[in-house]
Length: 117
Image 1 (cartoon, one colour):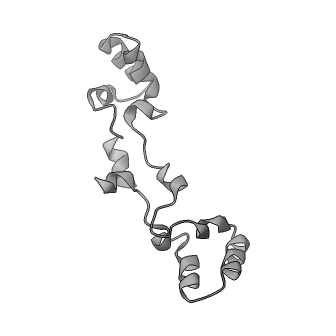
Image 2 (cartoon, rainbow, N blue to C red):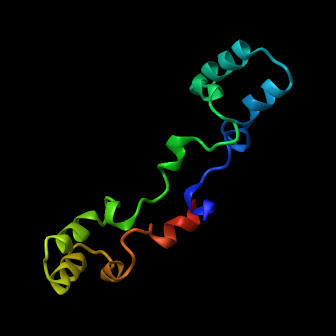
């Protein structure tokens, strides 16, 4: 279940930041490593975070629950407003979306996207 929550590796293993954590492991001064991050266009405050946790901003790239997904939220809102299921599915077809999405659990992210994380 934890895999569903984390789509990105721990910061120390993240390809974008691993080299900076390795520099710290090699006893380079924190200031020098932060300066290297600035030079490379990275946020140096990353080094102040727990290296065993994934980057929070990166976790946001994972798909949210279907009911909160910007691509499908309006259709779940239509259902919440008591619109008939058939009418909402027709609106999805009109908009070029897969109407079977409404048959899924609205609290789960779209499965196809979870595999890409």
